[in-house]
Length: 113
Length: 113
Image (cartoon, rainbow over all chains, first blue to last red; front, side, top):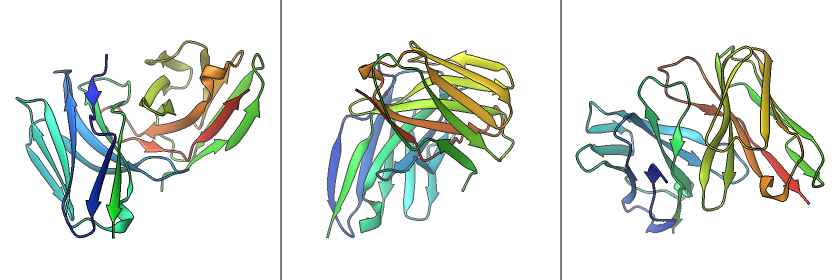
C-alpha cells in the first residue's frame, strides 16, 4: 500500500511557464516532506523541504505548498527552465524514526522549448 | 557534494551467484541506507544502519543482507541473485536522526541474467 503517491508519471510544460508537481500521502505520522530531483545515471539530489508545521516554503524558483488537512503537497517551479527536465520524487519522513524516507514513484517533468 | 562512493557502478551477474555492493562515505555520518529504484516503484528502502553493527530491515529486505563494520562502509549482499533483483541500487547517508535530508550516491546498475 503506497503511503506517498505521485499520480502523474509525466508532465510536459513549456519553457518559462509554471510547473506544478503534485503529491499525496496517507500516513498521518509523516511530519517532514521533501522533493528530490533526479537526472539519468545520477543519484537523487535534494531540492526543497517543508515541515508539517508550515504550509509554504520558498527557495528561489521553487516553492513547496503543504495542505495537511488534504494530505497533499505540491511543488511549483516558476519559471520553468530546460535544466528542470528531470524526474522529481516526493518523499516523506515519519517523526522520530531513523528509517529514512518514504518515496513516491516520481514524476518525469519535460520542459518544452 | 556529499562524499559517497558506490562500487561497482555497473555489474552483470548470473542467477544464483552472490553479489556484494559497497557504499563508502567520507562524511562520518552515522546513518546509512540502501534503496533500490525500479520503474513504476520509485525508490524503496532495503536496509538501513544507525551505527556500526546496528542495522534494520526496510520495506523490501527479502533476499538481501547488510553489514556495517566501520562507520564509513555499508555493504549490501545478495546471497543468491535473482532476476527480480535487477535494479539500480542507491546508497544514502544522513548526519543524525532528526536530520531528515538524505544525500545519495550515484548508484549501481545491477543486471541479473
